[in-house]
Image 1 (cartoon, rainbow, N blue to C red):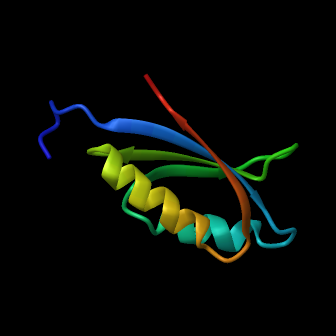
Image 2 (spheres, rainbow, N blue to C red):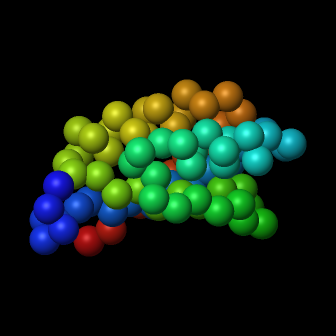
Length: 80
């Protein structure tokens, strides 16, 4: 993809099983769509930034993330 093309940027906020944070983070960082992911403290456990070419690619990535063992809940925020 050329650098002048616009990507869709979305943020996923995840709740994961206690003790699974680092394993889920490792799996996220292996995914092509994930450009950044961090463990956070508070109500949520991980925030991940996704950069994709289109909505179908975003859907595929989000569905894949939801299947990672330990992920209990996800919230997707698509940036404008």
